[in-house]
Image (tube, rainbow, N blue to C red):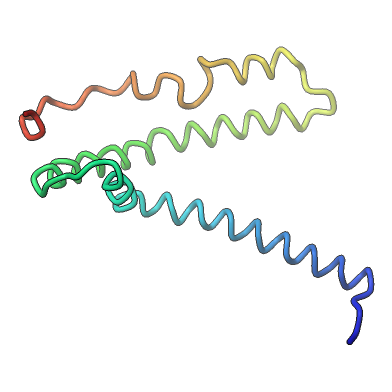
Length: 126
């Protein structure tokens, strides 16, 4: 049996870490691209939706996911780029960081509140 020497073990460890990183990123993307069936599937663990309720949910979920992808993801990307540029500075300014992490600038803060509400529906009312 041969024992790995340090340079070989170091290379193997680096390869393993990179593989895990790529896998983690692709799993997140895979989950996000499949939310249209993942959300109802997980929702089914908590609620028993009948076919009429499922039919009501499907187009509304599609609309919400399209809105999130077109409106929210670009905001997250901008926020992350700004945060990255602040943190790349040799000595990040604490006031910039406080401002960047203030609730009013966080990507999720008022996004849902700014959306127009869904029109009322009689589908799911008792």
